[in-house]
Image (cartoon, rainbow, N blue to C red):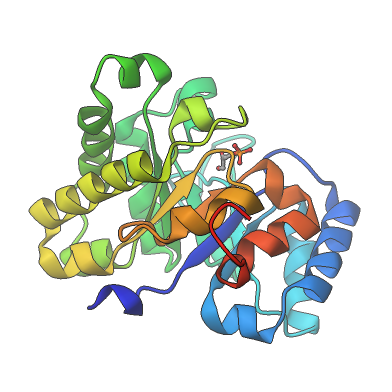
Length: 265
Ligand code: 13P
């Protein structure tokens, strides 16, 4: 599959922001700003908190909106005595398409390991949704020169047990931890270098076809002013946007990156 047939995917990870009333307002504002041409060129997913998903689903379906519905996490089991957890089966019932798995905040603050991430990837696939698998290094790891080792190790662990066809359908988000919520973005060249290493790892484990098909996002302080140059890198197919996805004008401009006049505008 040639590069140009990988559909770009811009995803808004709202994290623990927006109650369900605010979520509806945000989607309504985005609907005015993101048009048919944008959706023709780019896949756009929104990842509200669990308590908002039903409201956002209803709005998307009632108005035939082209935003894909996403979640930020799920449990690895389909059901059971797991107080406070959310089953992937329930998400699928709400027509969720994408589930973020192994975000660094889940790994760092909630103890998710590579083994948990692998189980969650399997759970999301089992329920016919697409995982967005997050990987990334800390500042200490970057300074120690172990970025590639850390990130490719996380990728290898997450896709272990997946068939080549499943791997080709995945989304992997490279999110350097030091760039998340800090205003520091990896340079496009640095981001490209790591995303290229991710694609090679995928190729080594699942074959060339999977490597060409898998979509790789960059995440970490993405803004309208930085998106175009990131997207011009050959191995970057999209962005996982945190803070800027809560501002409808900014997020719409990110989605419309291809209309910006020059890199950095
Ligand atoms: P920011 O865009 O706020 O840095 O967050 C990135 C992120 O963690 C998206 O998942």
